[in-house]
Image (cartoon, rainbow, N blue to C red; front, side):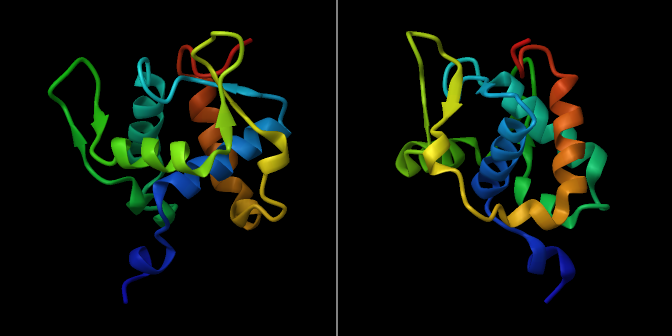
Length: 134
């Protein structure tokens, strides 16, 4: 089995671990998962474009469509469904921003052994307008 397949995880798990990492760094709100999800697509595209092949875990991100004003991940609807079913995040006070339920954080984030990847993802997200609230 090629290395890329061995390390590949579901993109939902990758994003969940990333969000938990961000919470630990003091960033507690995230872009909408449905209407207004452009920052998520930009993050996924930039991760794949800038961090492969260095981090083979990112092969899970899949391909992108370019039929709109920004790249759109072909797996986004699947990722959205996973977030909905998992019950790990919520909205507050009518804001479209997403927040993690802190009591749903994984005790052992599977990516704690690869903090370099999470840090790189954090740096990319920090450069995307509207990804984090100031």
